[in-house]
Amino acid sequence: MSRSPRLVAVSNRVGPVKGAAAAGGLAVALVGALRERGGIWFGWSGRTVGAGKARLHTEKADGITLATIDLSQHDYDGYYNGFSNNCLWPLLHFRIDLIKFERAQLETYWSVNRRFAQSLAKLLRPDDLVWVHDFHLLPLAEELRRQRMRQRIGFFLHTPFPPTEILSTLPVHESLTRALFAYDLIGFQTEDDLARFRDHVVRACGGRARGEKVSAFGREIRVGAFPIGIDVDQFKRYAFTAPGNKEYARMRKVLRGRDQFIGVDRLDYSKGLLRRMDAFGRYLESHPRAHGKVILLQVAPVSRGSIESYRNFRQELDREAARVNGRFARFDWTPVHYLNRALPRRTLAGLYRASRVGIVTPMRDGMNLVAMEYLAAQDAANPGVLVLSRFAGAAQYLREALLVNPYDGEETAEAMHLAREMTLQERRRRHEALMRRLEAHNVDRWRRDFVNALADAPAWLKATRKKS
Ligand code: GDG
Image (tube, rainbow, N blue to C red; front, side, top):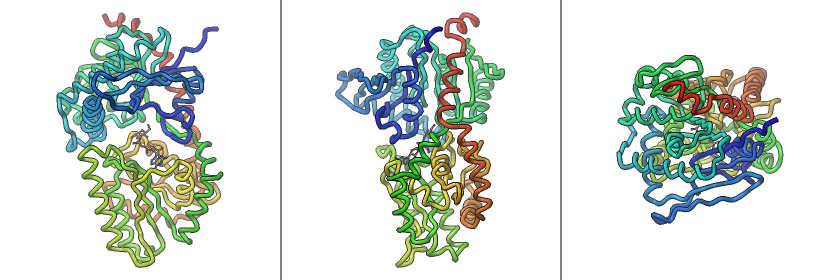
């Protein structure tokens, strides 16, 4: 029997291997897959160095090779802060108003992708499976093909895929879409994202879409929806064993019988924090009996703080939180507790468990893992309630949450009220159904489905020859 091919994962940042569980997110998913297949994880080292001093570093950890390269400050600014986060991120979250498109930054983005490809090409074996993550690396496969790499290369987009009308506002949308056709498989979070990609290929690129096959630019590739999940058991453990349990007990003591609503989000305009604060204010306004009895704990670690739109957003949110507190606080009760620090994952688990309601109301989100973590941390005998935006990818299968339109402040405020008042029987019924869905869509299934689909995709040469 032939050995299964080695897996090579590529992402902007390379996560910790030893502390993967504590780091969460992508690290958990990838480390599991890389250990299974003895692979490489390749990405940026997180260091900026003088121009021309960038080096490739490799180290082994737990049977996995971590390979990283440095970037100069100029590259980092153009590739990461610039084109990735100031142009692609708002575009992918339907925020054309925030897009800053600069050709010089696009060039740097592309040249960093080329440098990634040149370094990675030296490490690849012919039968490797290469799995590329997220919007920082859209052109990576095209650059790898330029280096004569013929491996199967897959791409997974963690963000939403926008409608063609929005994508077409990007002056270089065609060259970026063309670059995507150098992959063999493209994975999206939801069926809706996949449908928008197909539609874009057909309407803006003159291509064809039939089932899981999409063709354009002389290439046929495979596409699919692979909704990401979490490690459900690990999160349960975090919430119910020390130190998560210790934090839970502390939180309960501090709450003294008050009900807590919890939000946990990177400080990002896509997460709906401003409208959430406003909706909480509306809730307090229309439910005076909740005064003194409810707290909103918002954990919002600063993210991408050197970008202007993020700094402006932070100021607005500071003002909005202060406005709600100024209006409703009493000397013995502060309704909004707002933190800009990241907390350890185990602490978060305890805080989720101590919270009666989880508030996850992004304006647009690829999937949203916080919604799942909140559910997994609940006590099945007395679970809290999840209020979830319809515009998070997670809403496509977490149907038993209280789904809201975050643009509708009154509806969101009313959902906060319903969540707090919900009977135990109803809470249990919903939680049970939601847990079944979480378990069916856990992170192991996500990575296995994607890697298997990639291994089954037709090889690059065959697909190319067919079209020529
Ligand atoms: C992207 C897509 C997609 C948050 N605060 C703290 C902390 N976190 C952790 C959460 C969660 C993760 O960060 C956030 O994941 P999300 O899914 O909510 O959002 P993004 O960061 O925007 O992730 C998203 C995801 O990729 C996966 O594909 O779902 O749509 O935008 O795990 O717990 N972790 C710690 N302290 C904090 O204060 N330790």
